[in-house]
Image (tube, rainbow, N blue to C red; front, side):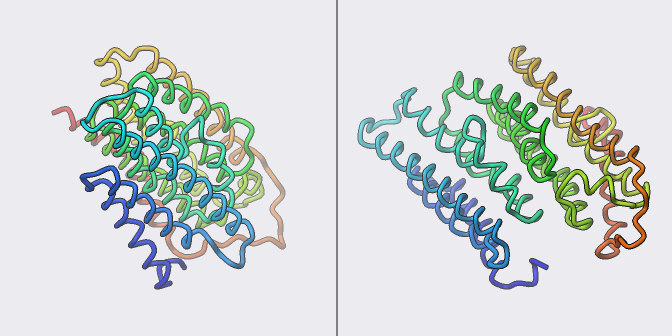
Length: 336
């Protein structure tokens, strides 16, 4: 496994460290350096000489992130040259925002995201969908054009929901889910950094559980769920975690969305809230379609095809699913 490889551990450490460099830097140039270190430490994590898909993914990732970094560097240099003082300029703000949005795979710069996700392992996917969002988001919160970000939020929400409808790959499905959740995160960082951190933490918890289950069961496509003669308990975990990811009330995934909707309404973002809620329904539609199929399709049990869980981590998943289903009850104490 990944964690016993000292090289990979070294790059993973640098990956975490580079994010801290970026978000604690006191100049745009320092932020750019942090982003570059981040890029160069993530590529060795993706690339695997035995796997053609991951080599392709690492090359694509490098090219896209390089373009975004060049754009970012160009924008901040232009800003330094043209404006000596901290003067707010809409065009430069949009340029800086666009390069950061491209870095995190936001719509309308999202085309690379599902392709790259398709060529990576579940652990790398988890890093790309959670940790890699931190730096661009924090930098975006320093300097953004509000109207531009609102348009981007709406695009993220719609594209994330519509794009996932015709996917058969679980990794691409998680990628579009991530694009949809990016809209929620951007709206939360417009309001408050604490709110965004809370949302990111909750979202990371849910997708870590999902990626962990998929990694254990060695699943990459939806049809594997149908022919998988696993016991109903594991299918129930799928149900709980998918519905939690969709943001259905009894589960923990609803809690951060509930709070964000609350704050959006206080700040009078009515149309954005309406679009978010409508798109959540679309997301739930394709999550429920997967769960329904895996529960109801009765394939013949293949005698020559035995599925074993990789190890005894099923109890750990059991525990995570218990947290997912029970913590909404605990979260009511949040308002005491």
